[in-house]
Length: 121
Image 1 (cartoon, helix red, strand yellow):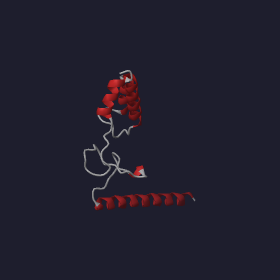
Image 2 (spheres, rainbow, N blue to C red):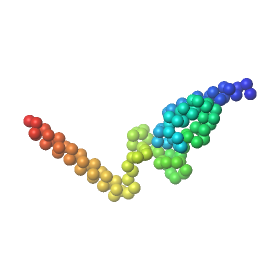
Image 3 (tube, rainbow, N blue to C red):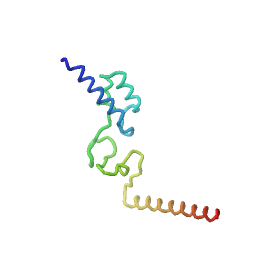
Image 4 (cartoon, one colour):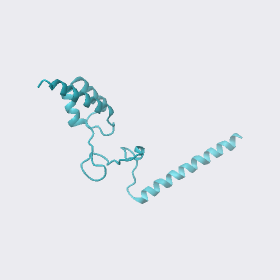
């Protein structure tokens, strides 16, 4: 039991770093700042609460499971991973419609810029 304090300190340090670096979208029950303050002020209880109640659930990479949120891909391009609030097409038709709208908007922006340049000079 002489190493109990060292174990608690290691748990506290791990929980603190984990809470600070966790993605805001996956944290459960309380806002990230509240979890960090709880871990800082009440090291043992706050750390255990963070690990069991607040830490984001890491589900399977692809598939159903009880991952708590959208499944994520292990991709070298994390900006293309599914994130909370990001549009994800449910059908190929919806995807094609979304791309059509993006192209139409880009064309409209190009037209506006061409008109602005013509008006300038």
